[in-house]
Image (cartoon, helix red, strand yellow):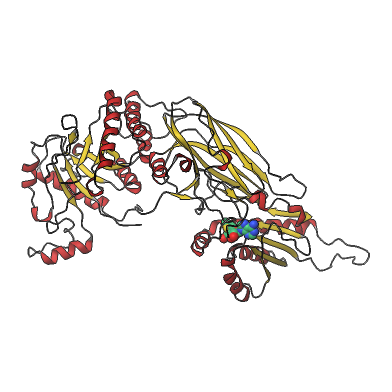
Length: 625
Ligand SMILES: C[S@@+](CC[C@H](N)C(=O)[O-])C[C@H]1O[C@@H](n2cnc3c(N)ncnc32)[C@H](O)[C@@H]1O
């Protein structure tokens, strides 16, 4: 949870308005910092509104507030000193960085998109410290709210005509400006409470939330406040965007009512919010085979206790199964079948710093099974910690460390159980099928590999925020086709559900695990209108005995958090309408040195094949050093 500065302002279309009168009548003017800012811009004066009149409020942190209180001889209490005149604040550097507001004119969307392009090219020519930004003023439902507001997505949701034109109007500008980060949305809320239409904006870049003052309950007899729906909407938007909040004076208002509304906003939204501004939403996918993971990456895994708990249960089930099926049988020499129960030989392949070794030992202890565990990893960074564990946490257990590449390692005796976790974000992107290609060379004929199988899934999604970040960090179109790990931010799901793409089996010995070219066609039907930016990938793994891991959205293993989604972008986003067929051609390719994925949209529009021959991103099968 990170606290950040939330800025409040007042927004009016008409600068000659009642705003100055209202502000001068504020009961506690000393506690309110505002500036009324005339903005001039050379850009297309005749055509666009500028934020010509605004009053900006900043909520001070508690420390700042108490500091300004100390300096303020009027002696206001700490409780109500959240806003202070002592530190007037500019929302931005007004003289140099005006905010230009594109009014909502969907009928003119081609012309507006052209103008947005011109605006962006003009911005790019300016010196770095004086680049203006532009907001697209966007009523949340276009010109017209839905006739019957929906709370839950139905199977197929075509947008009402007005809302559709608003959404595509904005996307036309995005496409035309090549997803410029100088453009974002000033989203205006509406009295109608429609969850489905609202949620599509959560994946768009919103820089400002405009709240008509008519949305606040009248001050008498109730205190001025927003409905639960509107509060939840603002919280969701603030969670994923660094926004300003503007109150729009859409009806006559008294200073007291306005103060009460602002006070409500301040109390409700200046708390610590779970927004993490510095954190990027996309990160390069891990390649633990190619490069050595660092300690912080291991620490991240180790916090996910649910993962290790599932493994522990699966290992317990596998040990239990082997114990039953191999129970000593009464024989002439041992009529009671009392020959000492065997010791199970388990190898944790790719053990990292050893949490799965501990899971195996706990599972064995819980059913009083004897085990010897090989703990194998190729990463030298793990060895010191593993050695320390050998003489501390595992000192009473039989654990042997192996520092090796699992592909070449052959144990002196065959194993009963192999445990591995090379699942990546897409089940097979850490080259698990290649690393564990020949379990029969390691396992006894009835040995068990955990996981026994794993599958990956894809679904078509829209997320301007994600797509823009991808483009911003990629220098050329080749790089834009890179697959990225995706922190779970909201995206618009364009199909009813994800589809399974490929499944890999990892035993029992003899079962075909050879992975050469795997290719498939994946079909979806669009359930809503939207702009298809790419495909979100997730996975399920069958560990053993009914214990599983899943990162599939909506079907996640409860509490599992260390895996993100993987994102397969489209070089050119594609507009889809509810009912459209979406068909994706998907391949997993490989040669002796690497694996890579190729993908191509076949419907509703055909795209070129992406990442041909691993041109943008490949997963090497060798070590980097
Ligand atoms: C995703 S991490 C999992 C680590 C650990 N099991 C855990 O859950 O914290 C995968 C581990 O496998 C190791 N690894 C990957 N490929 C390997 C290979 N071919 N041989 C040995 N270790 C390998 C990596 O060094 C890394 O420690």
